[in-house]
Length: 376
Image 1 (cartoon, helix red, strand yellow):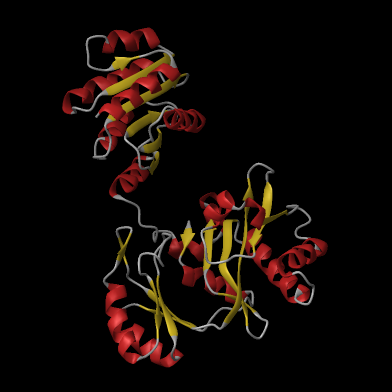
Image 2 (cartoon, helix red, strand yellow):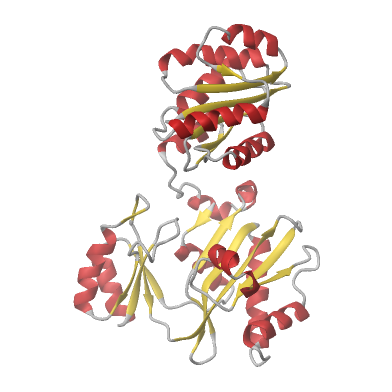
């Protein structure tokens, strides 16, 4: 679960991490009043759970009352990546001497928490990692022992070239890792982290993602649970109990098992197209669940072809075939199916005179789906 910037900062303040003076506005009028209270210049920051706010005009510097009035109206009328701006954080302007990037997240390769830092803050860290990986500093944290003092000291030296800030920086790192562990987060990020003109650290922006699987241990976050705005298909998929994520491609996927689904997505990409979604229908799938999965996918107008990739174990291929058979008359999207495993022969018999293109080999089936998608 993602937290809004203002919510992550509320947590930061509980741990005495310094943030700008801020107030949350729910409408234009409040934004103007709060701007006067905080003083000029100040910053309006749209509160949406997507990146790219600055590029979309969601962050504005306000110099005076006239600008506050004009820009409050503008920012509350924005849609950022189709999400309407409903709250604006009015933040005091901070005199910044240096900007940095700092986060704690999970290193899945090393299977441990990791601190990621950079001398360059306020930019997209993924892009920086691609273009100049040498500018990204990383420290793995022992999940049992936690962050060690020498690790914080070394990172401070790498970032600033001297140790004059080491005590303050070590304290900040310890607080950040404590928040990460305590809230069972997937990400705790400060970007940018400002070193102010009076040599204090200030969290200008904040991002937190909490592991959904740990939410039951954090009843204090329960009220935040429904704040993530999903699209209509994602909401319906959640109601149906499917693991579904909307992606940007043309190949719609129905797959059983998360590992097989990831391999399918990788191969679609390898063969030259992009998957339109991640959809794991899980095990023990019956005819009705296949019908529901298909009806879910065809709501996505970007999809040019549907790829069904089933490895039948507990899931029976003939159940999948029956589900396909009951819906294919309603749709005009080509379907490529690889059904292998339990009752495979029965499945092929059920679908032999239909428009479903049956291919045993997984790679060949995905190649065929990509080929169709590219042509359409």
